[in-house]
Image (cartoon, rainbow, N blue to C red; front, side, top):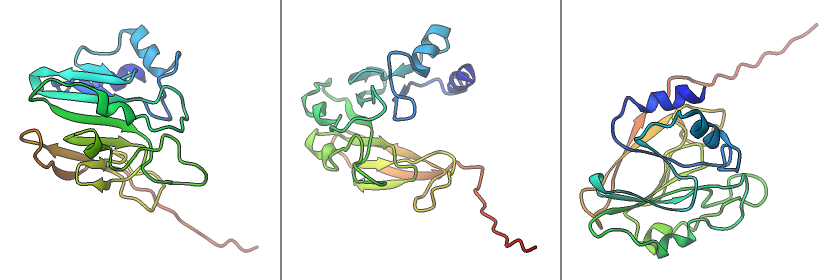
Length: 192
């Protein structure tokens, strides 16, 4: 299964940046360390297993990463984005996993300040955790899950295409439907 995931990335020659979330946290022993041991991670895939910056200079991108290194955390992992230095002329793209609001019962793990993109001078902040497509601010979006799940209150089954021509320009975000499966609920009354 691990090899199949990484083999699928070979269809796109450009760079991939993969960020651990709450279901696949970057623990000392994880799916990520197993993939590395197996030699399954292609050269064009960057695993964001530690907080920091991944510079993709040919693409003029700096990806500021806030991975989950444990399944649940309660601080804002993006707080350090403002301190990260990036090369002049590169787009500053934030990549994080967590909630900008409470999505379920109890305290939201990895609470992220909804104004982080503006505070850290990011050109775009890509977030994971919310299973559906959701715009938080003009520069901050959840793409959601590429396949629908059983949550009804969101907009799953999409990916986002984000175009930014130059630093400080507004991102152009387009929703692309990617889901191929649909959840169907059938109810029946059985009487004896």
